[in-house]
Image 1 (cartoon, rainbow, N blue to C red):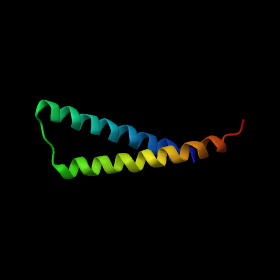
Image 2 (image 1 turned 180 degrees about the horizontal axis):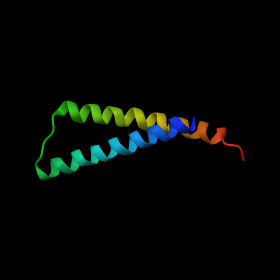
Image 3 (image 1 turned 30 degrees about the horizontal axis):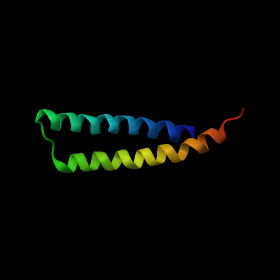
Length: 64
């Protein structure tokens, strides 16, 4: 479960950076196709959900 948590953490980070880049690009006048923004936001949402869901399970897998 730790590997899944780690992978989706990286996906969440990468897509989160892209979402912020899209917001900043809109502020300075650049535009991207709407489908790119929509898919990036959807992937971010799914990855964040899996990342959050696996956090508790990953913590329970650890031996103290």
